[in-house]
Image 1 (tube, rainbow, N blue to C red):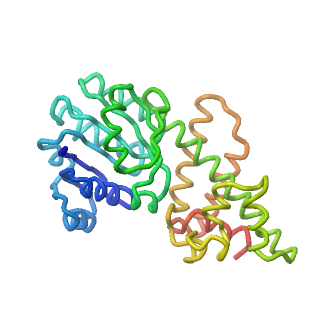
Image 2: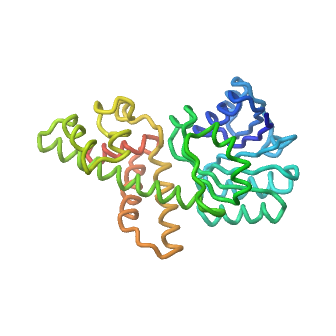
Length: 293
């Protein structure tokens, strides 16, 4: 079994690290929040006093960080040139494509193999080990990473070269954000027309309007018992995180001159939702704004 450095033990990183421990790997973790490091230790991991300290003896370094600036800082100051030669670097953060490619280039120049491997599946997928990994990087590095990704996920897709994992992730989440708004509008209109939400679900979930947002994350209570709508939109994937991804998509669209009219409007609507104090709600909670609550 391998010795793994895990930097970033938030809502996603901690359960991912726990799954690696359960699989028999030795995990040393660091996070700025002491409580989550303590939770890692309680699960059988080891605490480190700094990001760099996690690397002592590590075969693999995995990061799950909030945004591009943190990824650039951690890799620049604490990993590249500090990790032992041959350490495999895996960044699971969702960040901008340009930063992902820049960090990967710096790592390659220093003699490391690195992949970007952002995830989809939310905290439930992280807990269950069923995440989808969208992976960018060289074939050899992806092959080395696959056994560890398989522990944390159920679907690993190699999207191409460095940064392509990030590109696929933001395309996916832009589609999801747009789709969720459409689902909310459809259910809201149906209710206002006097149709029971269960009836709307029964038709839409088996018809041409069907989607992941309908079948798994239905934004009204009842039809899908596991959806956040049944827990007052307690987050599996926060509105703030969706908003971040929608703006990453807009930045990427501008960089390649892609038309994303609906993506831009979705970003504006989610901005409005979180400006009303809903950033920590699940992103499906935008139904409340659409209903005028």
